[in-house]
Structure formats: C-alpha cells, structure tokens
Length: 288
Image 1 (tube, rainbow, N blue to C red):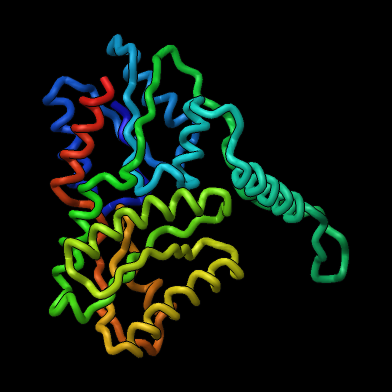
Image 2: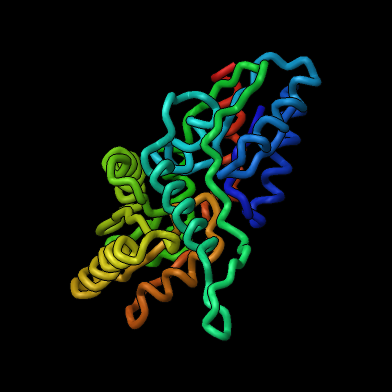
C-alpha cells in the first residue's frame, strides 16, 4: 500500500504512524509518500515494495476530493490519465518563464549589465512513474459518510443552538474552473448531510487558498465574507470549520479574510480521527 498525504502534515504524524502499523499488521507492506510528490519519490517507494516481491500497489490518497488538482496530478504521475492536467502544464510554463526572467542580465551598482546566476524555481515534474508493479489508485475521501460525520463532530464542539446557527466549511480553493462544478457537487453532498443531521439553519461550503492568484483569492474571500455578513444580519451565530485533512494555518488565513466580523472558528481538520483509519483500511480491502 502507498499512502499519499499532503506534505508538511505534522499534526497527523501520529495517526499516519497508526495507519501504517494497522495496515502492516493486516499483512499490507505500507509506505507513506508526501504530495505533491516528485516522480522519483513514488518510484523509490515502489522499488521498496518490488524488493518484497509485491505485484500490486494500492494507492490511497488522503485527500478531500478526487476532483482536486492535487489528485489529478497524482493520477497523471501514476499513469491513470494520458495527459497532465491543463492547469499543471500552464503552471509549469509560468515557472519556466519566471526562471528565464531570473536568469536575464541584471544591473550592477555602476549601471553595468552583469550576468548573475540565480537559483531558478523548481519546474513541476511532468513525468510519469516507471515501475514493474501494477498500481491501483483509489478515490479520495469525497462524500464518504465518514467525512460528514467527522465534520459534524467538529461543528458540534462549537455549537450552542443549531437552529440559530449557520455553518461555513472552508476547503482548499480550486484554481482550475473545469474541476469546480464536480468538486463543489461532492462538497455539497457532505454539507447537506451535516446540515440535516445537525439541525443547523444553514450550511455552505467555500473554496479558499492562500496560494491562489490575487484576483481569485479576493473573490474567494469576498464569498466567505458575504456569507458571514448575511448570516449576521439574520441574527444567526456563524461557525466556520476547515474542510481540510490538516488545518495548519487555517485560523490565521480566516482571521485576515474575516477581519471585523463576528464568528466562531474551529482549528481541527479531518485528521487525526479514528474514522480516517477505518476508511483507509476499507479502501484497501475493497480494492485488493
């Protein structure tokens, strides 16, 4: 088994170790790979499985949505789609142009043109994995019942009177317009269940990313602010929770977006949670 998890997920280190231990106890040699992953990192993990005479690797992405950019990038790297996502090619072109710009002649202190070797941005890896092992990429969490169950648990920790409360779930914002409709439809399925089972007056999902271009980031921020302002006008208490696997930095981002507004905010992502381990084991066993 290869478990793909967003790089820098220090909050979930303990759970990841527990998932690995549970899988290996069940007889599945397991390796954890950070995403976005360079192809060589995936190949190195697969080589370790090859050395154990493994013939198939079940690849489980610990990601929110199968329509996300990071999932599409992983699918391409594993050869599950012929061409790289359009956004990835465009992003690579932007980085290549930035690298070229950095390598141009620069002015010296005396106005002379100097050739200055500058460290260039790392180009996105557009290669695909080469391996003797068969790989099977399973879906991300999507609208599996455990997603709504965990989110509802997070919201209830902050709730007082659900019928007088509105919930905003903030997820990683999409940069590729083509993927937004499918992503949001899955997200709305989760939100609908949280609203109905929790008895809240309203519940919506929003995309937001600090890494998005300024114009997109400002549009995403405006959508969240408008929701909070509208709910406040209707005298509803607003609860905001991260619809993310790991919520590192979530509070700071929302504080900037919602400066001057009143709301209650959660700081826990979907991990760590026992249901995530159950979901991973379920995914592996159902895809042997």
